Image 1 (tube, rainbow, N blue to C red):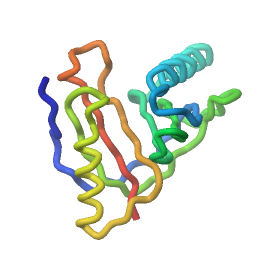
Image 2 (image 1 turned 90 degrees about the vertical axis):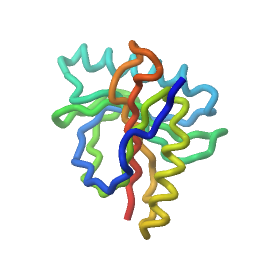
Image 3 (image 1 turned 120 degrees about the horizontal axis):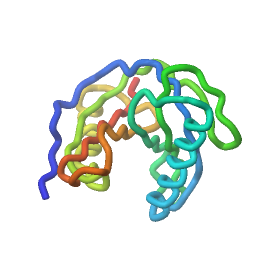
Image 4 (image 1 turned 180 degrees about the horizontal axis):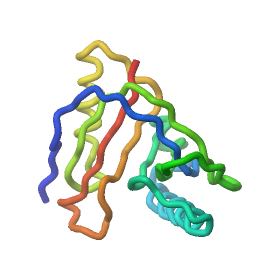
Amino acid sequence: MNVAIISTINVIEQPEQHVLSIRTTIHFDDYPRVAGQAYGRIMEYAARNGLLFSSGPFVCYHNADLENLDVEMGFPVAKPVTGEGDIMGYVIPVQKAVSGIFLGAYTDTDPLMMEIIQWIAEHGYEQQGEIYNYYLNDEDRPVGELLTQIVVPIK
């Protein structure tokens, strides 16, 4: 199986994003099950309320504690939304970030993540909080064709 970092690592300005998401604390091993349920519930909520997503799903890692992982799964939407229960509607503000794109299995993105963290340090920036993974295409294709954009806010 081929996996690759298929873009240069660059500083970007991430535009403001309206999102619908579910945030929870889990053990990393539970991520696939919890993420599947969260994305399903958000898709159901969006369908019930006539909402369309403006791009594919994302996951936001608010910490790196694999035993108590503070994780958020969601979708960008084109306009402000309120959410319901634990489905939150809010705005991710405009932010300066470092980004790169990975080709391969979602579970194999660590090399790009490590390169981005190293790039940030080498270029005099400082990571600012969370890490976002944006899934640019769907799982209905071979693993070798999956695209993930990693975005790390900086200051």
